[in-house]
Image (cartoon, rainbow, N blue to C red; front, top):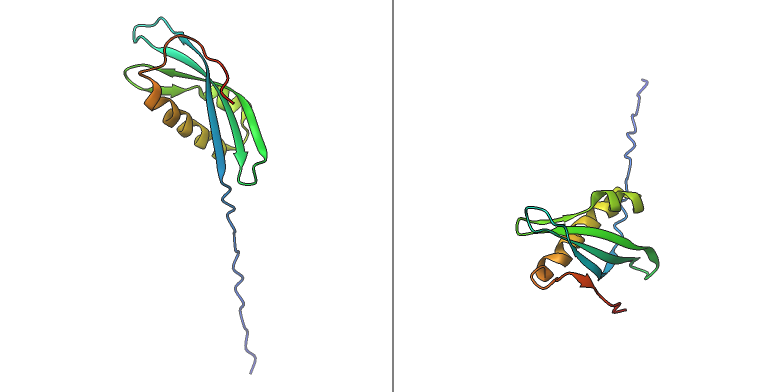
Length: 113
């Protein structure tokens, strides 16, 4: 009697979730002079992984007004290649600016770190 044993192979996919640390610093705030009284903020961003290795450092623009906070997708896509990291950075930029938007007046800001 011939019997056929089928062995199913299971593909195991390990998802490596890397933790990132974001450091932000406002560099400049300028008036956008539009009908929504928007302001453009230039933010210096430093991204490190969980081993404290520098992943990226660069300047990103964020526009905010009474309606909302809008990080520049062109700035993020132009500097960051990882789609996952792009999404994280957009969310973190909004989260960073939100509590400060009442206090961000036009001008240049000196470096903190």
